[in-house]
Image 1 (cartoon, rainbow, N blue to C red):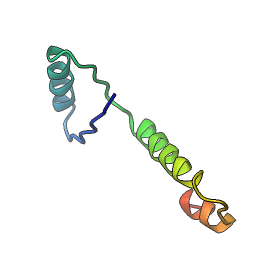
Image 2 (tube, rainbow, N blue to C red; image 1 turned 90 degrees about the vertical axis):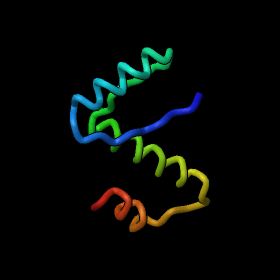
Image 3 (cartoon, one colour; image 1 turned 90 degrees about the horizontal axis):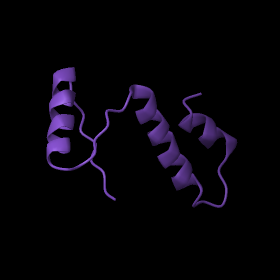
Image 4 (spheres, one colour; image 1 turned 45 degrees about the vertical axis):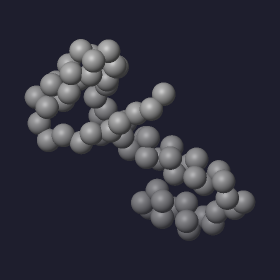
Length: 65
């Protein structure tokens, strides 16, 4: 499975793109701001899992603290 993320400004554009995807036989879902942030955090966690160790300062910086 592959995915595409498209940033839109207007809600009507979201409706149009989701409708188009469904007509083409694809699935589509609008993501909330929180879902996007969760996905970004998961990406950072996955990248961090490939390192041997991470300092506390680096973790706090990534968390924006």
